[in-house]
Image (cartoon, one colour):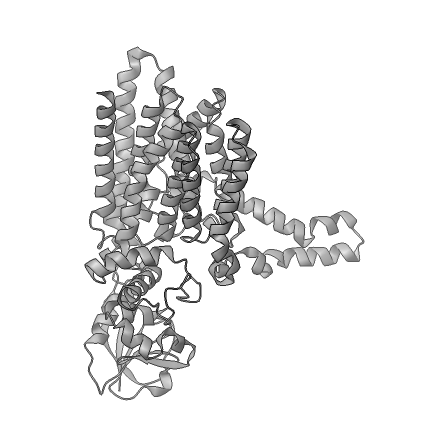
Length: 536
């Protein structure tokens, strides 16, 4: 009877989470960003031709804008695009589905990890609830973020790993290797986090569960073999390498170079050690790492406007005291399995800390389940230490405070995402393409270079035939100075504009030819997103 009760509660939690992830999915956020459009068109191309926008057959990395995106999201999304056609919902639905499935998985994962504790059901249900209504999870489940799918695979891997440990069944341990490996084919930062975390889990299993070295060795070999494909293909890590501060040393080392020159001149040995580039890099990494635990980033301001609702952080402010209580609870009771949660927490920023713009909610999304587990553990402890006389009042107070946080977040997200963050979502590009599609020859349409990655928006919203596009040379033509897709031109094409032609720009660059304004596409605040001109 109790089991049915828990499953009914879980069902209610999942339904709430599904609603929050699917409600107005194509309308909030109100426009697709360039990564979403890229995912969508490549999924469309794969579903129609089996090739990407460059004409590569079933690639293991998608070149896109030169960042070589991981393949998992495209292949998963190609199924939905095939069924639903190419549109904003079919592009985002993959993330929404996996974000919803993660709620269920979080419940079973937590219950499996803490299977020996009498509060496992309460802890698992609370964690699932906090995950279901989490601003961080909702934000990333409603946009085509591959990190969200990667998080699903990590949670699945941890669940299977602990199921194997708890039941003594080796098949579950080996099964866990597969989602851990798939995570590396989903998102760049997981190529760093997952191997380190997997080794950590093996050490935990050996030290505290006494799993035989032979089994652990076979698991490690199996994991390495599955991951050889991306390890040997440098392109699959190009995006990750391009955003690390190690490969962009100027910004990091500028001041230390000047200091080092001064130290050498003055024969200051200690200064030469402190300002050595290796020490500077270490300091930068530590600084970046610690930024991920910054309370203002987590609870009030977030980072990139595309990663959080306006005016809120990525975690509920009400969760802060409970997270601290939860950490205390798990440490105080010396719960062995909580070492995995602490290890997960401390390893989560290892990849994101290498980048040039930390903290980043996308690269550190892998953090999320740990915060929700601490939140839930803190609530469990609070109920234990509060007198039964006041427990009902406490529960009512907690529900009210959480509800206020939740209502504020949902208002900010569902109402103000489309009024205050339009500039961050390439608003106006869709409308520009729709206008361009209505222009017939002999007139031509020219997209200015400030309409960033305008070609992919044109392909997406025009639903340009992938087979035709590949036949015409595909995206390899982007290397050209000026290239055409249908009746529209991209690149540096100003010298080809003639009287009567249409010019589309965000007004960030000057076009030195006579023209008259045809139309302004405006943001909600009445400022101009895109302007359409006619050459005269």
